[in-house]
Amino acid sequence: MSNSSSIRHFLLLALADTRQLQLLHFCLLLGISLAALLANGLIISTVACGHHLHMPIFFFLLHLALSDLGSICTTVPKAMHNSLWDTTTISYTGCAAQLFFFLFFISAEYFLLTIMCYDRYVSIFKPLHYGTLLGSRACAHMAAAAWASAFLTALMHTANTFSLPLCHGNVLDQFFCEIPAILKLSCSKSHLREIGISVFTTFLAFGCFVFMVFSYVQIFRAVLRIPSEQGRHKAFSTCLPHLAVISLFLSTVTFAYLKPPSISSPSLDLALSVLYSVVPPALNPLIYSLRNKELKAAVWRLITEWYQEH
Image 1: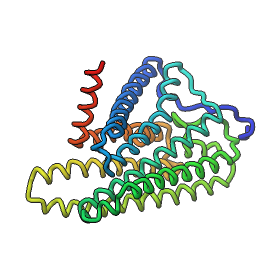
Image 2: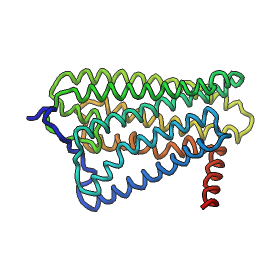
Image 3: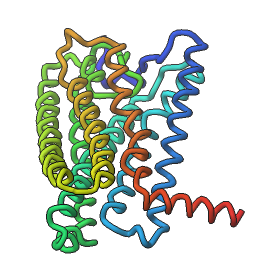
Image 4: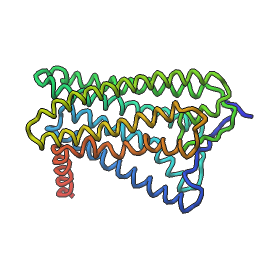
């Protein structure tokens, strides 16, 4: 038996048992991460350089791209390193840092998506007050509130998780440091405190989800009254993928963190974690950003200008 004071490193779950599959997973993760880095990097550069894109929706898209970059850079590089070099170790402090930054970026992403939903709602139902409700100062305050709330959420969960005594070894049934996997190593009943924090966080996230669903129901009702079929198709093609990714993200996170131990298994936990930690950062640029014609034109203009200069 060991306790948390004697643990110097953790052993992560290997993505595959054979060398060929390990290299395959490395290539897949490399492709996904490069695609996410390229797409989100283009969005950040385009919005930052394009003065005509300095509007609330693009301001929040820039912050969303930053959270996507942070999220995928927190978990995927270590998994790629372990697959390439056939190792599973991560230091104690590295595990704590990975957990904190992962929770920080995914929480910020979720809060930012809620704000973006509010932006769309105001633009449709209160267009005359759009400049007042979503002025530059209001947008800055909302973005700061999203990042600050994410920081407090991550700090609270990380501090509580790593304050628990660990006496069930150092083997994590996950490919990155995650709260449920660490809680399995705890021998103290004080982990009920972490469950209570997780329940509170889940209710907060569910409240944001209900707000988004309510807003989009109202938006859909307004869209259905649009006489142009092309206008209706454009609105639906933007909103439906948004709700689909949010639903996937919230359902997998909730199930992963609150599912009973009796149905837990390494393969199930691995599949769930990939769905909410790797997939969204790669899909978000396509769903929320690159489907926007104005942003796509600006991205193409930026690429063309860079090519001409070099």
